[in-house]
Length: 224
Image (cartoon, rainbow, N blue to C red; front, side):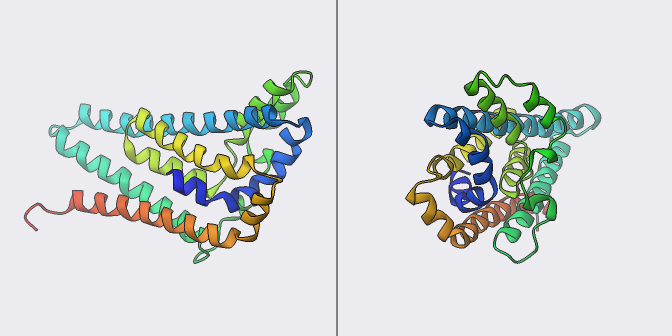
């Protein structure tokens, strides 16, 4: 998950770079960038917790409604793995260019998040660091194939803490490239964005393959 975030740096610079310039870049200084990214990564972590919780809730419901809870729960968990694997596979294939990326994932804009503009307008402009933290919280919800792939992986864990941990690690992986925005290293990342997209897509496809294999094997007859 860390590699998926780290290797997606080129994508992050192209998609989120303008937002970093538009928000913490206006305030200036590392504290503003730190507050922004702390908010963004916290949102990733919370979404991972929620997704893992959704998976756990599905398992608990199955436990209460079926005569053979263990077998049914294994089937549900395998189904979650298959769903997450399909989503991750789609996002990975779009990263390497084999299928087109959905238009709603191609452009990052606060308008894509319900209530985001109102929240940002109400934040106190006289307190730049809290405002940057709130901005990061909002921007962590932007439509993004990489983060949505991480959220899908969290769903398959069916465990809130594990799901939150995975998305936290993913968020930390995206941090170096965005913190280096404006430096020579970020220019290098932009120049080799296609290469990093290919590597990130391959990592996502490998993760998707593992989920799909685990899901299929859970349904495979034990005597087959």
